[in-house]
Length: 115
Length: 114
Image 1 (cartoon, each protein chain N blue to C red):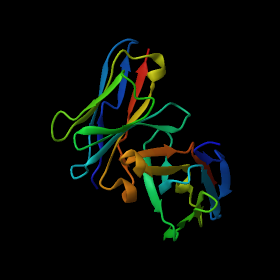
Image 2: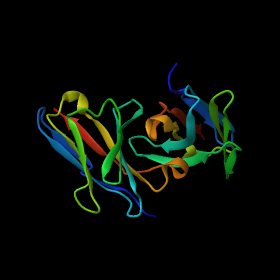
Image 3: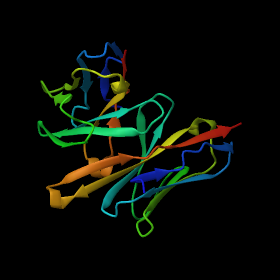
Image 4: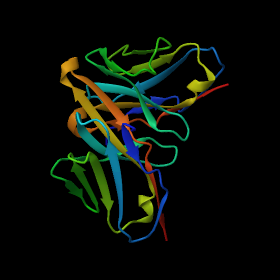
């Protein structure tokens, strides 16, 4: 099983639609979770951190399910400008190794919002 | 908004040559990182740097690679004896608090080895 797994898509949705992405992770020691957005040939940009209680930022809602080891991103009322690749990022901190940490990116899910 | 600055934006080099990629992290950030992304593939962690030393490195970051913080602002990645497969986008990132605030990425240096 991959450390961080995402459906690469593409997800083609009409403007105004609601779309959801999931990301699964394999290591139960994972501690921090993030969603990044990456436009074509650009750098990743932090979209939002993902907290255990779930969090919302405008049209974007992120959820964490530790029991099933996945995080999700929900985008409501999709805009053309939401077209991008959404990267799931998982950070593991293993205290037994003196604070070793590992950050793993998923391959990303490509979203295309259609007029 | 503060940003991470990388230079050059594009570097073409011949196989076997050495390259130095430069980064200026955000000034109040203490954690620095290099990542790479081969075209069409996922972003891969190379190395993290804190308190003037490497804190973690991946299996990709072998003896061919080194990092330096030569002064209070620059953070460099040196790749010795470049190979064709080193061609990728190299991103520098910095963070104030990696556990809670994630990372701010620079716009990247596209390295092409010919």
